[in-house]
Length: 230
Image (tube, rainbow, N blue to C red; front, side):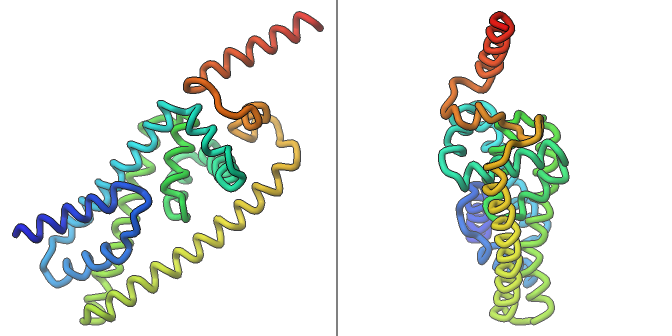
C-alpha cells in the first residue's frame, strides 16, 4: 500500500513541472493499471490534475510578472518567435489553440507563458488547459494500458508506448520547427496592424516595468505629444 501511494506521489511530482521527462513513467503506470496494480481512473486524475496545476502556476506567474517574462522570452530569437507565433494564435483561435499547443514540443511552457502575458481570461485558459491535460493524460497512460492489454507483455507494451510517443514527438517537433522558421522569416517584414500581440516598439524596447499597464500610459503620452506638435 505504501509503495502504491508513493507511486501516485511520484506521478504527481513528475507531471507538475514542465521540464521533467516522464513518458516512460506514464507508460509504466498504464501497464501497472492494466495489470491491476494501480487504479486507472485515479492514475488519470493524478496525472491530469498535477499537470493542470503546473500550467495554472505558470500562467499566473506570467500574468503577474508580464514585463519580466516578456523580456526573457524576447531575449533570444527562438523564444521570441515562439512567443509571437503562439500569442497570435491564442488571440485568433482562443481555447482550441490553448488545447493544441500543449501537444507541441515546448508547448507546455510557451502556451501558459503566452496566455499569461496576453492576460488571456483565466476561466477560458483553465478550460482549455484542463481539456488538453486530460487528453494528454489519457493518451500517455493509455499507450501503456492498451499496449499491455494487446501485447500481454510488459516489455513489448513499453516498447509500443515509447515508440508511439517518439513518433508523435518527432511530428510535433517538425511542425514547431516549420512554424518557428516561418516566424523568424516574417520578422523582417512589417506586420499587419493589430496582427501581432506585441507591437514593434514593445518588442525592441527590451525589459519593461510592471505588468504592462505602464506601457499603455507611455503610448498614450507619446500619442498626446505627437498630436501637440503636429
